[in-house]
Length: 419
Image (cartoon, rainbow, N blue to C red):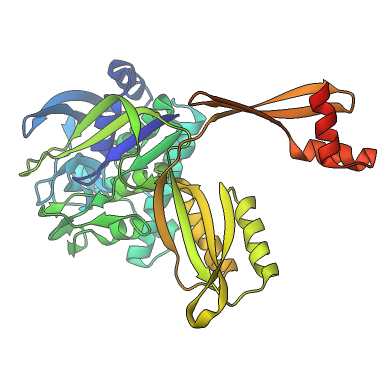
């Protein structure tokens, strides 16, 4: 399964993500596409960059010949997005600043969400890219709305509304389409330390909009002073990433380095790993103890979890404290299903806590073949791998035949085996 993993130890900004992902595809083809998408005055160039001896790409995004680079604290260069801002994303700076007094007049252009959507609708990109880009901006608008306590319709995008910021968001959406990963993971996100200057004054890192976007996402301050994660970077991660965790077991085929504008003691970059991961890979085991629910209620919970896509759900009878009979309830699921399954377990069970374990699953390759028999069509499940081959008739097919013929499942199975 094609898997993309984003390492965000130095946070995330729109231009840094774009630079890292561009190294995973034909970079010249991507530059041709983004420069030809119809954003007036836009010119995007991939510039070689070195941070702490590591070579990568810095995306230089210019609008009418100007590249927005924040002069403040932060650094992530180009983040335009940042909501602001510039394109210097990891300058992380920019980002939020929503407006850092840079001095560039275009920085202070204010646009509403409807203006942004209109601009994106007119670009020469696929419908999917347009949909994704609008959704990302919608998340940023919601975060700004919450931070400023005003309706989304009244939110003014500062730097985020500039053409270079739109280029960051649309560029990342375009690259995600070009890469076509089946699963996208990311590490917990570093947000930085200190304060950041924006149009509204000096705010703590992460800025309010970024903090809102990172709700539900594992994040930490780290040891670097400055704004490492911008609103745009946070929104793009929240929209595209299915699970935030350590890198899964995968056979890496390509690695991309997206460099920020500013220099830090640590390499200011995002790394993107693209490769193949086992379809099964790591699975999560969610476990809790129950001693105060009926068998019917437990059964209902099992049915609901299976209906939601759990890999397996089962209960084990045990003796609990004070020798009360109880059960250990277990749900097995994929990593990207974890939050959903935890929610369902708390909804349908009386437990006050759920234990989580990560397991590596090894499984046989499975296939299904349909054969004609005297009873009609019957499916055969086949499993292969590790020097093993197994076959068995599908139980539901055997049961349907047994009911129709007025006999037992074993009798039907034995009859088919004799043929």
